[in-house]
Length: 151
Image (cartoon, rainbow, N blue to C red; front, side, top):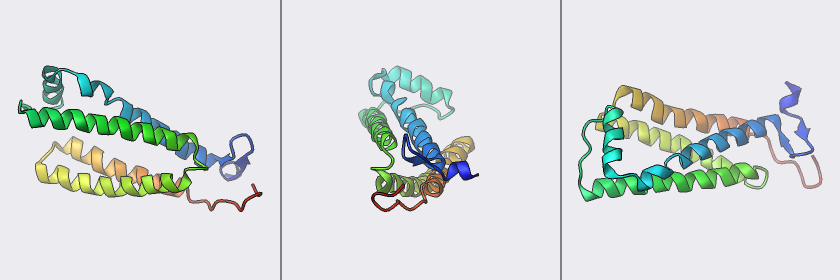
């Protein structure tokens, strides 16, 4: 247990902070997985949509626009999340803000998923996982920053 609170002089992060950085890296890499969807043909996006059990995707230009720009947003968010994870000491306040945003986003997405009638498996995974990850990160990043010159 003491290992999780000791500071590693090589990284200046505690074990809990290294776990938080790892979680952020996983999430950041997950965001990068949306990169292909920015350029995939609409036919492929339609097949994926149907494979997920979401029915037929409309072929309206706004639907394609929203699918591609949302994917781009995930990629950008993933890059920013990776940057935060790379220097957690420096970006601790931003990481905590990220966690609070994840909690708020998770709650909003849960309500949206319920309102629009997405499949239960999607609704159970998407919003609640974001909320849990946000609270987990807040717990992992809860230590107070040491005074300058102290470790």
